[in-house]
Image (cartoon, rainbow, N blue to C red; front, top):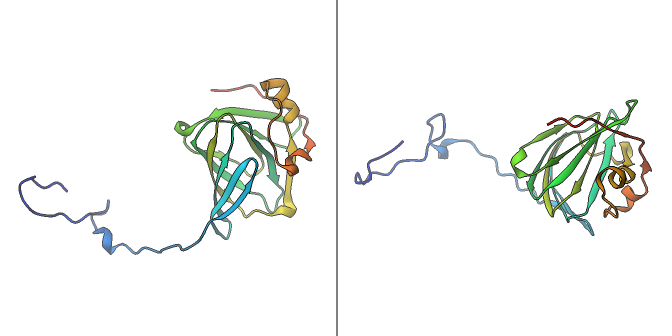
Length: 183
């Protein structure tokens, strides 16, 4: 709705359905984020209800998070995006043979990426990075498996000495082959 600049009239803010915004039913979610902090940065669980979890993490440059995967019936798909910074993003199907590791550099302009529930996922922070996850499927520590691809990072990407969590440092190496890259 546009009014002439000199009309002196005031327009009510309207929604796409042309209903006044004030008339829309809104629910205030008074949920405080839960923060987990370590030397890599932090992870905030912003919202969690049933099988829907919204997380945001901050990782310092040189941090590798992953590779993580949850076995069914606790499988977890992820809709991910980089808010700021740059990452090398990795996925692999840990149940396939041969295990092909796919990667792609992602930044804020790349939008959302869907990581299917059957894929293990991880990323390397090229720069200080803020990252968001919208997960379908609750986190289940008992169903989570961690795999190491640090050998692959060194051999194929020249990345040595990545900062990892104690859990990821103890993860068994995953034998992978580099998948052909598609743009």
